[in-house]
Length: 211
Length: 211
DNA sequence: CCGGCGGCTTTTGTATACAATAGCGTGACC
DNA sequence: GGTCACGCTATTGTATACAAAAGCCGCCGG
Image 1 (cartoon, rainbow over the protein chains, first blue to last red):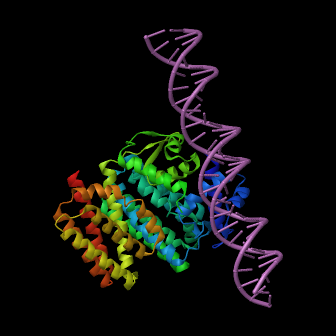
Image 2 (image 1 turned 45 degrees about the vertical axis):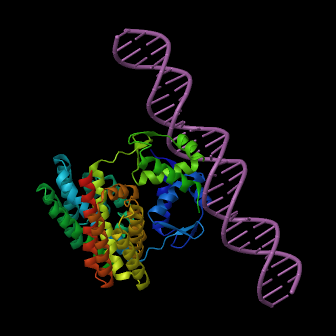
Image 3 (image 1 turned 30 degrees about the vertical axis):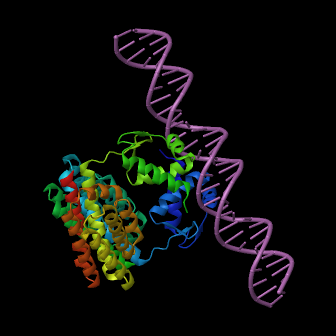
């Protein structure tokens, strides 16, 4: 499944998010084709996706450059993510099957364990965290919602946020995941929605404060 | 600006929405390239967009077919649109400039006039309606939001809804637009958001009732 | 008669060649 | 010396050729 277009997408996005291609940098298909070692065709496809997700923008005459995300843009992303992922949680609450719910609980246990460790491993935390959220989104069973959220749940952005987390924040996050598990177990859509809203908005404010 | 890819996109989407390509129909790039009179390259690009918007789906092995939108899918679209467009209205309330606001008021006047006419022209109504909503989305000044809504505000779906509208429904819709203008004039984000939520959800239920 | 295997064909994915367009530099003319 | 025009070049858009993969069909064997 590892098509050239997918690899090009991952590589270009990585270039952008790592800062190797700073905001405002001009982008050409040929140049990226060289970097990625593929032809322009898959690069074009990757750039279309990146453009749809606003990683790159095209100025009047079809020329592309790396987008410059202002603080306000990131705030908007968090707001949208809070709305949509809370909605996903509400849907998931009434749809999740017991096996998935059990997996979610187990994931939360691992997360709590990771946080409780003497030297919390941020990478482990991030992986468990991501898996947890992705499971919920999948359980919401709405491809449209999943697509929209995929463009918002930007791991490197989350990573930057998490790097600022102190232990208390990590613990709080784990606790909120536990709350979500409870809400799901109770099949309480409103509860799940409320908890998720708070969960994302707190992450946003931790990000903004650290910013 | 009328690139072949754009024309292909419009034509293919039209085929799907008109029912000429019924849900479940297998799709091949070559076939569409023939129909549109272009090569596979722009067709591929168009299909990528249509896939992202869930007009077409690809079964396990990259084969495409026309998506089959169930009632539940349409309900989810309306729900998401209600959430996102209400958010757009809230943003617009605090950002819209007076000139645009005046244009919105004028649009609403025209809409009311069209509805008040002896034989309301549904096409006129739809055009004014669309322009009204697009103006608000533009005023929200969030490209991300605009992109997401573009995939949800499906004119042909709206059209099917509107065709069922009786005069009272049209009048009510116009009235709600008037409410939105008032909320914007007052720069009241919460008011605008609430009105827009109701506006979309009412449209949904009118649609659901009409079947 | 049914099931599996193999090649054929269709379809997608990628590379490359070609066309059109826009930006930019250079040079000539005022 | 400045400005406009022209041509060149760099870049995107489209077409086509080629590669790879997957389904389909028929054939063969049990």
